[in-house]
Image (cartoon, rainbow, N blue to C red; front, top):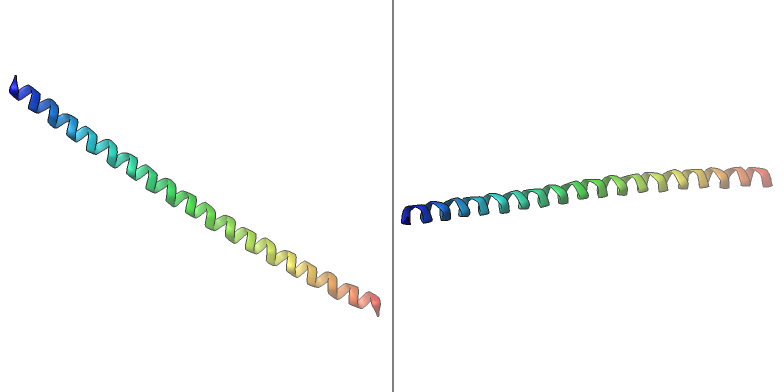
Length: 68
């Protein structure tokens, strides 16, 4: 009976370590995934802003030409 209790306790401890490790790993993967998405969104916004600035400069240039 004592052996059975120890065996169940060992199985429980192993299962607990396994589940906590699994949860930690999923949290880290989720964090990395969110960081990658954030970087891509930030880069996309930068590119979008640069495109808007270029088009604004083109509009300013064409407005100057129209004035003259």
